[in-house]
Image (cartoon, rainbow, N blue to C red; front, side, top):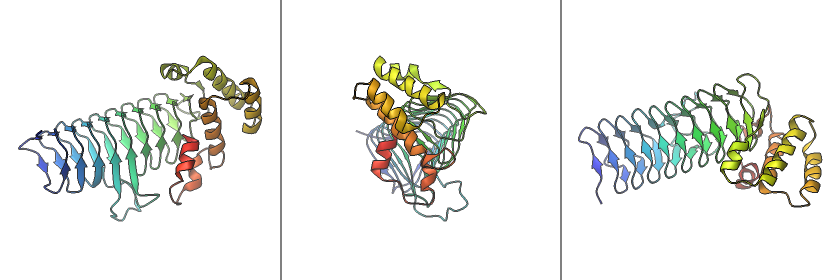
Length: 283
């Protein structure tokens, strides 16, 4: 198994390379970078900083991964970018390494599709199977949970969380958390519009679970009932066994309400990274 590195590329001899890696012309790979098996750097790709990249990731021209965070507080510490497997980074994508906050890491999981000119700022956590469409901007400390989709030229305020299976429409300004399976489609109004039925069906979620999520949406955003009351009502309707999708939604909204300004993660600003249990409950 051999690597194919263009004579016009610069790969630092201290970089750690897996097998079957392709590095095209005018790429730069820094000394503290590790690239897993089967990664492809088309051309004019820069990967720098303390950046760990898994297997079979593909980087299109102009993408810059691991550059310093755009944060005045950054003092040059050895913060990181950690990327999983099978991600696609299209033209001009930028992923900044962490600032000296939380745990100092920007994370991207597996099987994510980052389209042209999208930006992932410092200390973000992009989970798995998400889509960032062209021109999407993630502010610092944003979390995108599994299967979240953000449409073109939308901007996500720092410390926002987009829940599992959520959907953000094009040209949106998102300043509050978007709960799991919900849709935010207005450029000016942060209120949740409806549920992401199409996305739920594509993932094979049962019609009964979709029906309960729809009822929860109406109770929360139309009748403005509290989470405890909604949980009691829907436990009765589900005959005592709520589907995981409904549990995920209610736990997320309850967690968001403990934060500030409609953003649950604001409660952890300038504090250590939330526990794994908190991530699990909010996912």
